[in-house]
Length: 138
Image 1: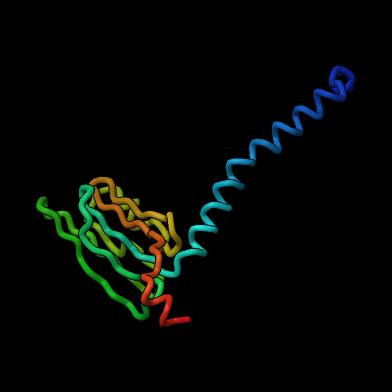
Image 2: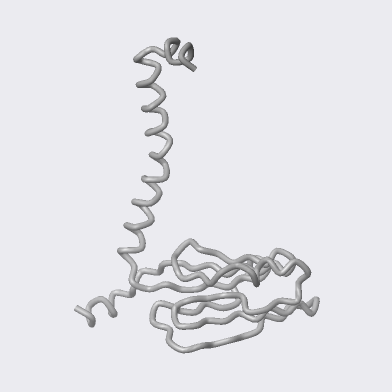
């Protein structure tokens, strides 16, 4: 091990440290941009799509209580989606793998639940508040 440390020069160590620091740059830029986008919007909406077609949109930022509904497709595929307070989860599904049911509840923009066999995607999106709401709340 001693020979290894004798082989490394001062500039080699500086370059390695700089490369490690630069590897975190995309994560920090993405986090900053995401935080800026969510601060600008005040509403979160759960968008449910089946086979790339929007089926339902639910505003979860001001949702209280529990609401359940079924998504039934043409092949008798059934998914039960539960909205509890400001979180959305896949309560049950009759697909074989049950990955979507085991996925935890989502509540922040960018989070998704995907049922691949039934082609269902539940995604949380940040939506800008309409101008009238901003004027009234000021």
